[in-house]
Length: 205
Ligand SMILES: [Zn+2]
Image (cartoon, rainbow, N blue to C red; front, side):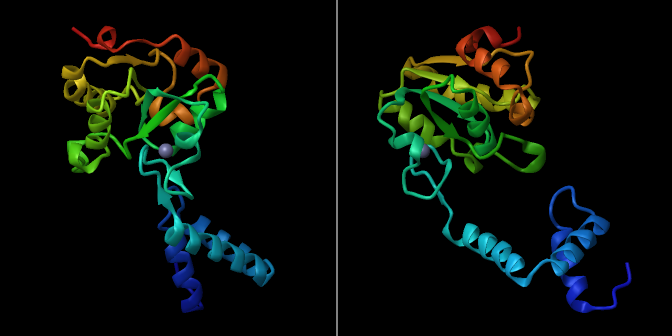
């Protein structure tokens, strides 16, 4: 792509770094921004800059939060003995949308994936095990995707917490979870949380 302007070229290059955005789309977006009032572009760059510099992760569940402890963790109406293990904030949002879950979450920040160089130490697993050791958790619900990486991660965590006698369950398989969790319809997802099954039953062989 030949550019008549270095400024334009730089902006297009940066925007095209975003997932799913090719050079052509990046150019379209950048030209769109140029046509907008300057104030609009200022707002966008301000929001992005602030997001990066101000964002916090909940000290307890690692969800993205504006405060040290997130709104879910400090809510006295939530059952803190019930913890749902998810990959990222999109899963929290999807489950919250169902209004069927009143426990807390634990956001791992990904799945174990040796191919991508992601091991257990790269994820928020040890803090979950610590919570279990403290004895305050009655049940852990696994809500990771039913991919090989999801299964590996579930099993790894299961093995870590098994000695502490905590109940483990998984949301019913056969419905879209994990990578697709954000798209699963709310009724199905809500139902699968209510009718979760013991984790042991989900282990193959
Ligand atoms: Zn939290």
